[in-house]
Structures are given as C-alpha cells and as structure tokens.
Image 1 (tube, helix red, strand yellow):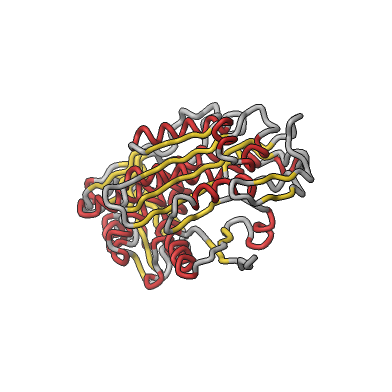
Image 2 (cartoon, helix red, strand yellow):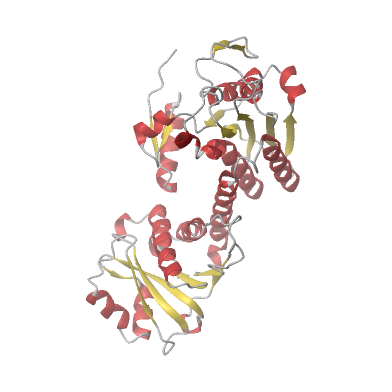
Length: 411
C-alpha cells in the first residue's frame, strides 16, 4: 500500500474516503471545515447517532460528491484531548480502517490525527497505525491479487516527512516480521531463516555468519544440536552484525527460532500443536528489528542472534533424562523435550555474553505459563537491571506493546 503526505486543501481531495477526528469536547479544526463544506450534515449525523467521540468510535456519511470530491467521510473518536497519546492515534487509525473496509474504500485520506497535541509524532503514530491495521496475510488465498486498500494519504505539512518515514519504517518492519511468523513450518525451516538473514544482510551491508552442524559441534552449541537432532531439517545458529562508524553502545538481541515445535518425544496434543509455527516469533522479531536498523542506522552496535531448530520426535530425537553440557561447562538434565526453547537460548546467551554487550535482550515464546499469568496480549518481562526495566516499560506505553515485569529470583 502506498502511503504519502498531501496538501491540506480539502476542496481538492479525491478518493473513496476522508477520515477526520473528533474529541469528546468537539470536532477537530479539519472536521469542522469538512462539516461546513457538507452543510453541517456531519455534525447533524453525530447528534442523531449520539456520537460521543470516545476513542475509536466511528461513524460515516456519503458526501454524494456535491461539495466534496471524496465519496465518503469517516468521523473517528479521539477521546479526551488531554489524554491523547501515540497509541491512541494508532487505535483511532485501526478503527477507521475497519470502517474503510466495510465500505470497500481503496483510496483513503486521513487528517493528521492528533497533530494538534502530538505535533510531528502524531504523523509517525498515524503512519504506523495505518500500516499495522491494514495488514493481512493473504499469500495462500485465491484472491491474493485483490486490492483492499490501494493508497492512503495523510494531510500534513512537508515538515513532517521525516516522522512519516519513521512511521513507515517501523510499520513495514513489523509487517515484515508478521509475514515470516505467519508462514507455516513447511515454508520456514532453519535453513530458510538463514536465507532471509543473509538477504537482509546483503541489502543493508551487515555481517552475517551462519553456523551449520560442523560449526555448532565445534562451538559446543549442544542445546541447539540436541533440540534439532530429531528433524530432517538441520539446526542453525545465525549471527547478524551491524557496526556504525561511531559506536555509543553495544546491544545484543536474541530471538528463539523454533520453526515448528511438536514437543519432541514429550509430544504436544493436537490442540496445543496447532499454532506452533509461531514458536519462531522471537527469531522473526530479530529479523524485523535488523531490517529497521538497516533503514535507521543508529549509533549503536547491534548483534542479532538467532538459534533455530525444528523440535521433532524423529528416531534421533533427544530424550527425557538426557544430559547436555554447554560451552561454559554447565550441564542440564532433560525433564521434558517440550522445554526446548531454554536449551537453544542458553547457547545464544553464552555466545552473546562473549560479545560483551552493554545490554542483552532475549525474546522468546518460551512458556504457556506466561499466558496463564498475563493473558494473550501482555509480554512478561524478566530483567536484572531496574533502569533497563523502567526504560522498557516506558517504551511499552508509547508503543502500545504491553509489558509486565515479573520477578526474577536469584539462583
């Protein structure tokens, strides 16, 4: 989908829909201007429908092309003006796009929602919201060529171009990640994750090292080897490195890359196995982050580490009661082969610690117990640094990615 900035003159706008905003205390200036152009029909409709402008509430009215060239006007609630933040803008964009899809609009225009409160950051959040909310994984659908939303325009000054670009980079990187997560296990194997990593690295000039069986044995990455030995698809370890000219800090990000988790010999039930193509989500997040880093080029050295394997119950699969010794000399006894994530991540953490990072972040779909504790939409955070934990929690509020800190007992 094409996303761009255009001039604010509503009399010249063309397309299938125009989205404007309203706070609980009244319309935005753009919405007032549109209402005036329509002979107060928009405000009349809002009164008739008792529209309160609560966050994400929407109504729409056809313009009939008499005073506006756009075919429909969508009014979206922004809630209380004093409480508006970036995530509220993203949510407003999301609810607007649901209405856009209902009326089958393909070319849409957006008022720069929240610009009067958030300034340029409102444009960034709106761009993110449009891209994230329009996402669909339709690769294997028969109507995959069908265009749902062709283009989206934001009515804003050219001075916000940088923030629009930032929003696009973050939104597109997230959707790139979603695409890989949504691919099934027969499409995304450890070898395919390595291919994608190499492709990203070539595009952005990163260093990329992929360890196969020989290198895994040489480096005593016995967790990855054990988990992957029951599958015909051999395991890998992937290291993507970004080094800017001026380095302020060194960051290591690690993502769990189990491309499919059957549970191994402690095999999962059919119901629990159904979504296990998603057990590679941490690895996919690393790839998406590195894609964004390639565009943003921050002054931070970043190493993306992906331990990846397929956990299958083949004839060579590892067993309960097996003992594995890691490169740092620590040994573990296997109680359940369905607790495979911590084994491959241990190898990555040992490797990552040798890079001597300022910060190391491990992302994993590691245990269903976290879902029991926090539900389906909140990430559990375990952190041994209070300052870093506060930073991550503050970022989670701005991005709308919910995080809750859980206790990390000392061993």
